[in-house]
Length: 99
Image 1 (cartoon, rainbow, N blue to C red):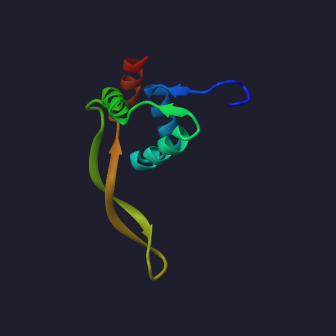
Image 2: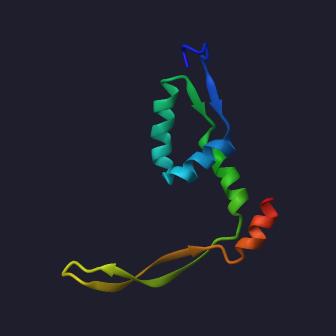
């Protein structure tokens, strides 16, 4: 960036949220990334703004329930255990709303 004469770069909330989602990183790792990038002159949008946008996108469209899944057993083989399952009941409608 210095060679190109760029001293400061700002990345907006929707772009940072897309990066977070694409890299599948949690909020605490994003904070670490923000600090690391800030040292190089790159500033990311604030977490509060990104969380607000995330709530707008997801809204009340997520449903969750406990479901049985197959996991590797410690003694070999597999075992069934309950685990959270989260999904969007009407994904097509949600995509239409966002378009």
